[in-house]
Length: 91
Image 1 (spheres, helix red, strand yellow):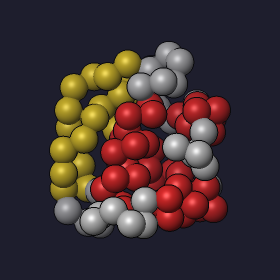
Image 2 (cartoon, helix red, strand yellow; image 1 turned 90 degrees about the vertical axis):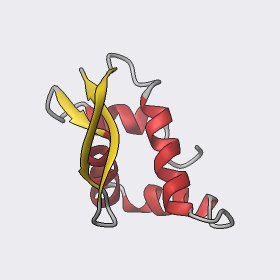
Image 3 (cartoon, helix red, strand yellow; image 1 turned 60 degrees about the horizontal axis):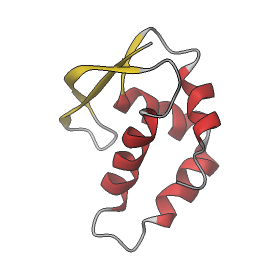
């Protein structure tokens, strides 16, 4: 990823509760860092589903945030509305 950097993800995660999921991170990125989010999304515009690809990239990038570990899978509402499975994170 080029627009959503590891330091930006770390800053987004810092004020979040000790346990959260990837959908929550994506929601914060969309609302508090819309330029970076949309720029990252545009990088994948040629894929069949740019939103899914971008959100998968964000999820993989969360593995690089210091102090985070995975804590199972959870179902929650995604940005399109349906409930889908995603990664739960623990600080």
